[in-house]
Length: 423
Ligand code: PLP
Image 1 (cartoon, rainbow, N blue to C red):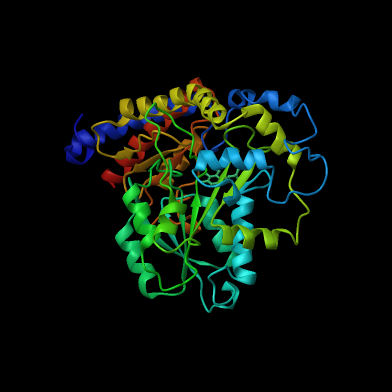
Image 2: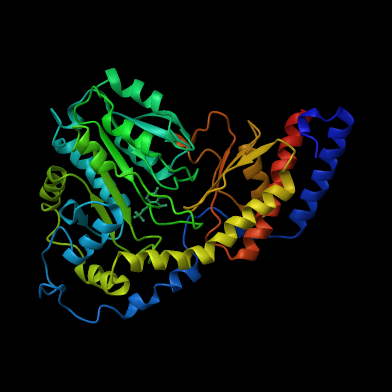
């Protein structure tokens, strides 16, 4: 195919007419499809149904009755399992409730109200608090910060992590820059994996704020789509080795491993940070749901059990990611009006369309019965300065629906581009 921008006016008008009739045909099909949700499909949830019959006992290894109060830091067996998976010490792991997002939220609330172990004062007493937000990124990270009135400064997310030179420049002299979000493995939505080198620079870089914190959200640490399984950088060791042991706080969960609404979330950090976190948690909780912890331990047995389980997820979802790529390639390759990611893990495909057309693509798709995540959702305040970014979430619908929806999306992308170029 010829790139759209190099077609003659006549050929471009012809292309536009073709796409318009393809689009009318698409609308006439009366589809009702949804690619908005980064949720596991029913078939994926079914993989963990044995959990519904567990645990088989009421006692943990040490004989503690899991039905009762206590054990704020979580079941020891589960902490050990996550410690192995995340390459940390069991004592550095807190196993909590069903949501890592909730743990991130309460961590930031603790920083705001009390300050962290390195803080000169609570963040709420600072004139201004700013966070570095690699973009595109996870919308809920950004809406959380917005709800606290924390200012967001964007840097570009590259294939090997955030634009590290930009990050280093931002943190060097400005003590109001207190944190950064990092989704190190198979980032939402780009699929990027933070390289060892960039992780080391994040851990070691001089920061004006003594309590600058890396919120290392490893939500997709084990969510491989290929045999080439990416290893997350060991941020806690890197930070400790460069003299900043309290800089990173790591989060993960089984939301996309077992049940999204009834999994287990964990936080991992330096001993001082764990003590700090638990000290505040103790004011609001007598202990987590250890019955859920125990049934997860019984279900997986060990870290290898988790890895084996993730391969079953991969069998279900890898074909859906392949279908996204096939539909986009078949509809758009060569036109030079779109670029998309080829993730080797995680839950999303990042689609960049012609500048200024993402909102139009989403609106066209909606009119044709295909729900897409709102354009700009992966940017702070929902504002994509180039109006080109669309996050695709292919895991939830069945494979056939992914194929149909994505062929439709390709038509919408081509139509919006042709409209733009003929304006
Ligand atoms: N972090 C990232 C990067 C996510 O994409 C998601 C869910 O989409 C979450 C966290 C939510 O995690 P949890 O279910 O443990 O709260």
